[in-house]
Length: 98
Image (cartoon, rainbow, N blue to C red; front, side, top):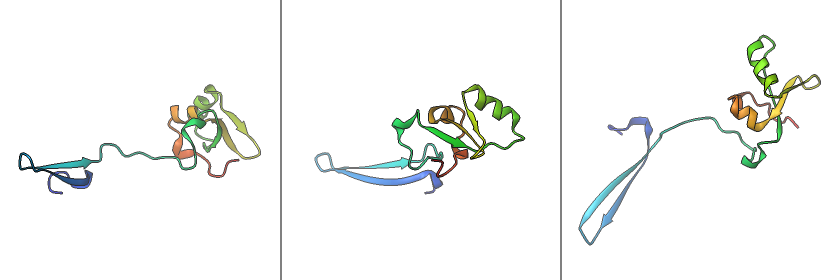
């Protein structure tokens, strides 16, 4: 913990009886990012709703440029999951969209 702090995930010891050596290995946190539950990797073409505030004109333009469509009824922008990932909008996905 002193050396790696909160990035330390796991410490393992392996013993080589032939050479009488103990090897210590560590597992470290390299990256931490959000993940989307209930969305399969093969669903990149699945259309999903994302929430974008009315005042976010520049972001709305990027979504529209990527082929996103405004859904008046649900008040969300709809676009394929692949485009949501490309635009880094995973945190804006509307739960229970369907």
